[in-house]
Amino acid sequence: MTELLDATEVVDRPELEARIATHRRELTGYCYRMLGSSFDAEDAVQETMVRAWRSLDKLQGPGALRSWLYRIATNVCLDALDGRKRRALPVDMSDEPYAPVEASLAETLPDGAWVEPALTGSVLGGDPAETAVLRDSVRLAFVAALQVLPPRQRAVLVLREVLRWRAEEVAGLLDTTVAAVNSALQRARATLAGHDGKARPGEVDADQAELLAAYVDAFQRYDMEAFVKLLHDDAVQDMPPFAMWLRSATDVVAWMQGPGSACKGSALLPVDLNGSTAFAQWKPDGQGGWAPFAFQALEVHDGRISRITSFLDTRLFELFGLPATPPAEALPGR
Image (cartoon, rainbow, N blue to C red; front, side, top):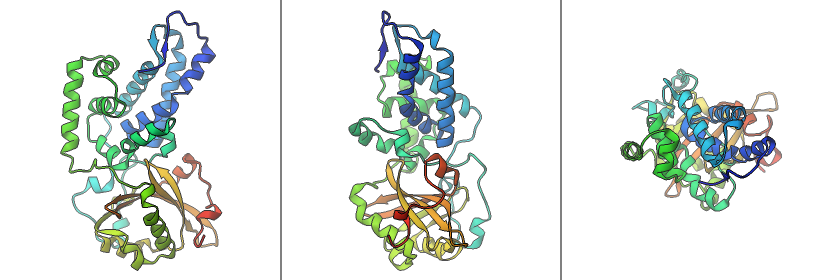
């Protein structure tokens, strides 16, 4: 715990507001892990800042500014989660995959049902060494697994295991006992351990540069013979907001040659999402131009792609600061 305000320190309101703003990114990361949505995390942090600014006069030394902000953010997240169904990915919502046919696009999920991606730089940042350590804590698989936990267990696990707060600090933040915090942490660990290994982080990083380059090349040429060689035989593909998910490289390719064939000729741009390299995708609009379409998040294990999740919410392009048309370096053949 850092950044204490000493009782004898005189800090005016503008300076306190500036100090609060320096915590925005780490609070966004915390709220994202809690809520599983970049949009919800942004809203939660904004509400945290509003509540903090409104009650600055109540912050008196000795007091921990950072812990005070986390207390507010935790309450905002718990309020937001009250009575709400958990977010998940399509593969986690159904026991059986869809056949790769037109009917696979017939069913969509309700708004707020799926885990959304996050721009790594918006939820991690600052010290490069710290960022490297925390990357696994924002992987899609891990964030999706967190959503299985009851909200207070989720807060305990993130604060204790990810952010490395002491049990006494978490107990103070949640107005509970150290024993209750330790018990909640044990239950949370047991739940994640039994979650079918879905919390296993991916391995997409600089070491897979050659694989990722081959992925872009095969996808942009729509060379399915080359594409299928990059996938594990039991690779999974899902595409929220559609409820469909596929399991097997054969079905993934069959789907791409069928319902997904409109992706032929797409532009891809590498982006850093959830601690891994992902790709923003623009599709040809049929009129000689381009249209934002999706963000493709990959999981890589043992040198091949094990999962492709394509998020079709085009609002993410604006949220992540990407243009409506692809930059030159994203165009096929570049």
